[in-house]
Image (cartoon, rainbow, N blue to C red; front, side, top):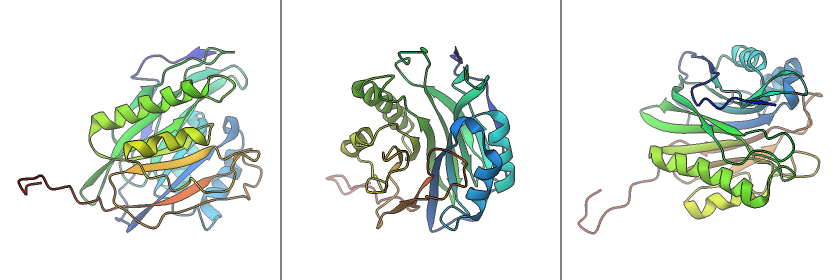
Length: 257
């Protein structure tokens, strides 16, 4: 296992033309196992009614070629920072972020705790998009699984991500493979909504893939799992609708904003 410890790279990105501003964002997360079945994944993302026309997509277990092919097929901007060069398929491995708007100020967030067996690191990819004048910070993440770090270690990884989001000070969307159901709930106490909390299992009977958001207002959460993946992966993609308009800022005692 070769860890990419430089926060600046490797980096791969391409910007697409901005899309129209939607009334709600369709956010999708999809772990495409070792980026092996990209053609099938493209068919699923383009043809399934629940996934078609997604506004934000978080991908996991990706390599550069797979990310580029999916983004080109969907006409989306992308940024990809691999976490490691993986010994199984002898290629890069990590999360990628896709959006229908140019992705600004992108970077890699290195998460704490190396895995027990291969000493592999985990990372998140982040960048911001301008949706009708509203800046939204997006994160694509793949936390370590429970065999490689403890639950406390998974919580530390999520906390590092949430702390990074706090430092930005914008509305936030986090999507990805959390390799846990319970750990996503840790974000609730920090003001996040969790629209995917009640979805059906996305991987071998487990609910591992989720979407979180904060600072984007309230709506009746809508989310689900897509079961027919046409052999693209051992994970099922998960989608959620996220409101675009931010919640009103609280007034101070003096009546100001």
